[in-house]
Length: 263
Length: 275
Image 1 (cartoon, rainbow over the protein chains, first blue to last red):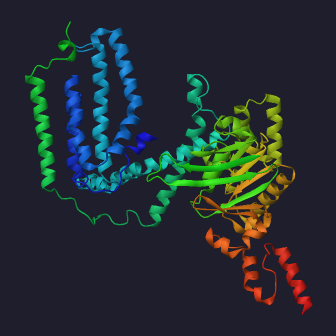
Image 2 (cartoon, rainbow over the protein chains, first blue to last red):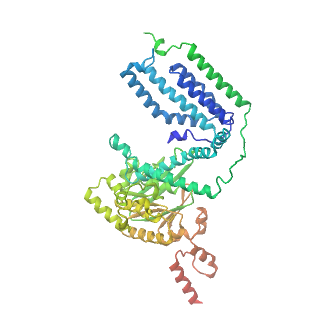
Image 3 (cartoon, rainbow over the protein chains, first blue to last red):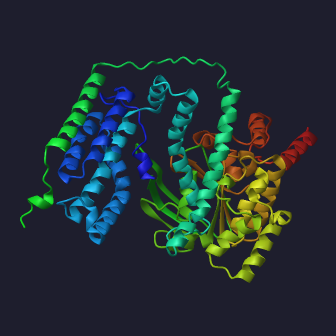
């Protein structure tokens, strides 16, 4: 469950935490676009390193590292598969790149995405997030559903742990058997988890309605998001990043590591 | 049966790190009936999870039947130590009650004939025979709790641990449960319950282990511990109501170590006759 831990918000204040969530989202989006634009390992490496100052300023190193560790399984998966397919059908790797370099690049690209999303979620409180959505004219029903979903992830993770303990206490061994059997081993965990999630949501709905949810059509908010100087700075950084990336993509010829290596 | 030797435990994921168990030593003999009590967060559940290996001590060791819990798997331990979780909804998943009870038996590799016999026996034991083919999700809270209990007792573990067995149970269910536990214990099973329910413990009168802040603050029979207001205060529990009356009447020369109603009646009648 360490992946979820890495996305869990904790209340602290830092220049990154105080940024407007809409701006932070723009930054994440730019990161996403840029990462997808490039398959070159050096560029992805730069993108990865570029974000580390943000992590340090926000002071969320530990949780951030944990989210990266949590992503390691998928990263390894991507690496191995790209490597295998790179060797099976050499046509899939871009020109001038060895399958090994390509596999590394793909794994790193995923890591860059996890990294930026992790920064976003670690430094944005669910309340701010819902405010941002609301002020972007998303209907309140959707906003509410979204923030509730985010808020219940850790609760469900904890519940999954309890259920796992309960079934292990009845002799369930998750790691036993062949591949299909192992998947089936998770049925006794998934069913109680889903049932209790449905039950919980029904209870939540009843509790909300008994407290008058949706009684007034027009909602007002105690806090209103306002852009500050730092927010415009981050917008500027994001735009520069995007423009530079587009320029490099179209006008600069990037060498790959494979080409640089002596033959 | 269960030996706990200077066990310390810290949850690996907790932030900030808190030691949940701070040097617990405890010896539970075969056939004993123990109630572990204490306020929320005292470490009761953390302690009993050490008994079937769901948690392993960070320092110290736990021996079950002479074997260190570190050395064997949870499944192997579960065969000896049955654990009934607080919320039955955390374990029920099968289509029928019968299948639910058979689940653990299949995991332990019981033969099909033995399995059938065991399931029938467990259904009978907890008065669930009529629900054999019913979906466990259709049952009431009390019945679901009984299914959970049956699904553990079916493999006849030497030790049964019940985490908060009385929560959400009405008076009648509690009484059935109490009689059942006492009977089970009388037949030689080691029973450990974790509970807040002082009245329930007073009526069962087991050995009581009182915990506070990850340590054992008192250990002895129910009568001695539940009637001592100083000990109770340290672990944030309140003596049973009947004891509170007798504590308040102490200056009449009445005994203060009364925990159940029938005893109280006897003492009061004697007192009234003497006057």
